[in-house]
Amino acid sequence: MPVIAVDKPLGLTSHDVVNRARRARGTKRVGHTGTLDPLATGVLVLCVDDSTKLVQFMEADAKDYLAWISLGAGTPTLDAEGPLAEVVPVSLSGEEQVRAVLAGFLGPQAQVPPQYSAVQVGGKRAYAVARAGGELDLPARNVVIHSLELLGVYGSVREAPRTFSPSSEGWRPDPNGRTFTLPRPLGDFPTLLVRASVGSGTYLRSLARDVGGALGVPAHLAGLVRTRVGRYDLAESVSLEDLAQAQGVPDLAALDFPHIEADERLARELRQGKRPKSGAVGRHVVTLDGGLVAVVDGDGEALQVVRAWA
Image (cartoon, rainbow, N blue to C red; front, side, top):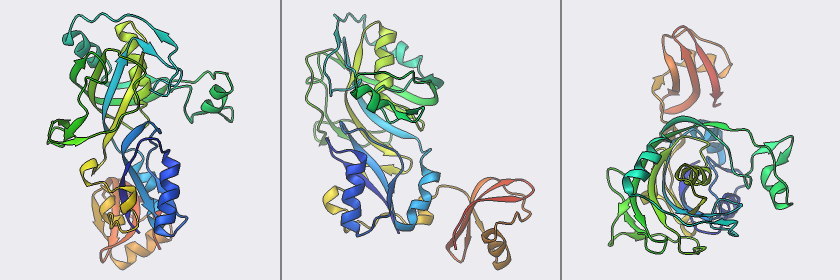
């Protein structure tokens, strides 16, 4: 029952990848830990069979990206799907101006999701209303942006690097590395190449819009590659063609919490939903003889079961 990091190709939805995994693995029980837009590529973490129980514990994982943000052109979808909705001239005073703007987006903040998103208001999906020509009043959501590093400013997305290699600081431009496939550009617009690390629920399309706004111009996300989700790096991700044979990561190894080794009594009480006494504080994984028993929250006095395994 593995957890598998897949390299999602351009043009497929996350649900498309889940459907392919179901066929490749011969099971209907496949889930993912965080959607990637069709025009984005990179790491999509799949949980197969009993590993679907882990999704709730992995959705909050931090995510790293390479983002190409084109300035001076806005689109309704906020990405390269288009069409162009507003085009204006761009005048930048230099990279320091851009770095100062990016620094203003670091930390906790409120972010308005894109109109073309799966966010629901009053039982209606935002993208369904947008495709019908309408617009929902989408409330801002609390997100966290951990880091934004400007890797360069280019005359167009065509001039920006798209060949990279992994490093200890994240994926970096490298002419001898791996070449990423980006969407067809909507035009020749000044483009920022940004390496981003963000918390759960952050929309990079919204970030592109907001960075443009802070620079005084419309903007859209011309390309996006997710290079890491939690412990899963793109360098170790498998292709769709290798899904059937992929070994993946066992359930226990996929849970990045401190461990409590239980005895038979503690394991039995947790599986019965009881609150055994314990000095543990915070979220822990409880094991018995190397097998998963439960994920628990400790308050320093007792353990509260979040999810138990039979």
